[in-house]
Image: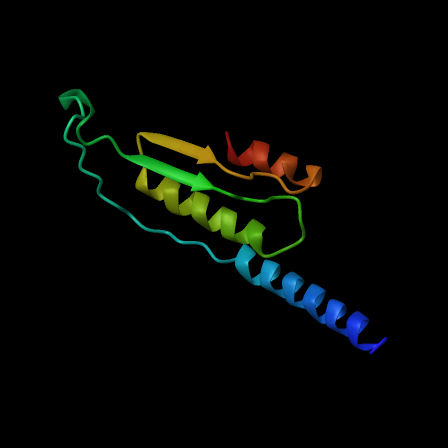
Length: 102
């Protein structure tokens, strides 16, 4: 029993790390049309891109996923880009974040 708990804890930690690595590269790229009844006419056709939860700075596949998402958005030339969520996980991701936000 004394060895079962550390083994189970180690397995849980390994599973969490593996999931984090997998999830970091999981990006959903999709275009949605959102009709809004009360939208002023002058805003009709405005294209908005939303990027979120980069979690930069932690060694993972996430950096490549972020670069792919930024390229995908740039190719669509939206009128406005919103960036929200957890952008940094570690301070070492800040230089890349600053570059991407230019």
